[in-house]
Length: 169
Image (cartoon, rainbow, N blue to C red; front, top):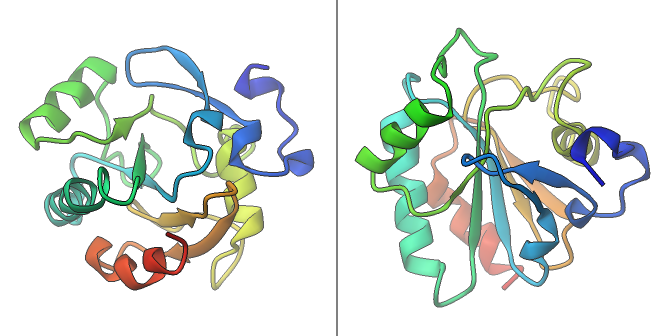
């Protein structure tokens, strides 16, 4: 089922969704079954970019093989136009930052045209002031059953997620 056809309100886990990789391939998120994951909206021109990409990369390097940690980066241009590039531009940018984790095509995370996965994540783990993403680098921790179990804002360093991740390994 294409991601646009998914009724996010009926989803049981992230495994019910598909998304397009940064290379344009539609994949089922079922491929992450049995893994703890971080799903994050990213941007290349944000004040958080350098630190977050670096720390997410370190988490992936440290726990990707040993614990099976998966990280899913979703570029988004909804916050001050800080991800203006197309997929090729974003690919080039993440290569220069040595990103090895999975990157997906640019999506909207807020509004009626938000990707269904992001509607689901926000509903399952609402924010302090409502079910919307406030800025780039909002991070969701997903357990091995595909359930969103925690949400962290952009001001939370990715390294600060380790204690939460450890509860689900």
